[in-house]
Structures are given as C-alpha cells and as structure tokens.
Image (cartoon, helix red, strand yellow):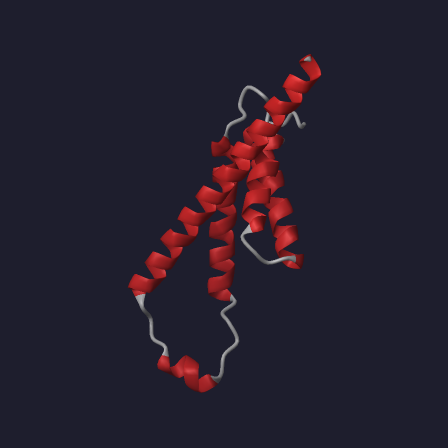
Length: 123
C-alpha cells in the first residue's frame, strides 16, 4: 500500500496506464489504472473517486491522441468522410462515461482490497 497524496497517486496511475496502452489494448487498462491510483492513495483520502478521476484524465489524453493520430484508411474513404460534430461530442462523452465507470470499479476494488487486508491483519 502506498502513502501518496491523491494527486501523486493519480499521476502514477496515469503513467502506468500509458505504459500499459503501449503493450496492451482494451478496457481492462482503465480498471487497472483506477485500482492503482486508489490503492496508492493515503488511507484517509482513499475512495473510488480517485480511480475515476485518474481514468477520466487518461481517457481524455487518449481521446486527444487518437484524434490527432487518426486511423489508417484508403484515400477514397477519407474523402467521403466529413466533419460530424454530433458524433464527435457523443463519442467523447461516451468515452468519458465509460472511463469514469471502469475507473470507479477499479477504485472500489482497491478500497475493498485494502479493507480486506486490514481485517486479515487484525484477526
């Protein structure tokens, strides 16, 4: 268990998430980042919202990165595509919502894991 403030634990969790996204791809990374950020937080500040905020920041960073580094597609398909602001906003909001839910789940698991370890030590 770490003894970091919530900001430092969030930053460490985001760094773990970026490194893991280099090697893996999937939504499991968001749960892992939420778990790490919450588990590294001090016991009095520990809540699932730390993990949710960490994954929200990571989702925004990844959304901007993937917006700049677009997918590879043939020229004739990219010419047919236009700017669709509605789909852009809905995609952004959906990505943020899913990241917050999965990060909160990871944070909840970290809180339960830290309480479980405390109960085992007391008994």
